[in-house]
Image 1 (cartoon, rainbow, N blue to C red):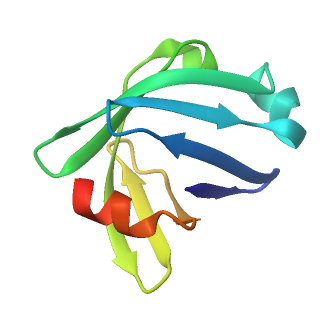
Image 2: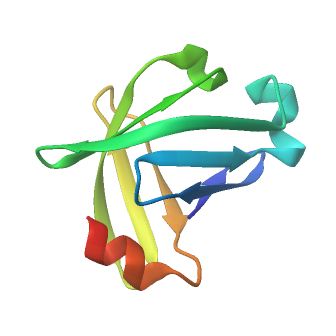
Length: 96
């Protein structure tokens, strides 16, 4: 999945075992590092994330809505944005 941010794209790879890897590249000025690992899980209708260092290592949950190739996300605190799924889209859809 690639998150679309004002600073540029943020690719995140999700594994079926509940781990994820993010590569910030051009967003290092914001995230504090170009690379991070973390965990993800599903609670009710939300997908939750916890990075080792990004976002202060705090739990962050979002709701997702598919619109064709685009994913719309919204956090509990009102932030929202979009993302696109990569070549493994069917794997993500089957797992969610």
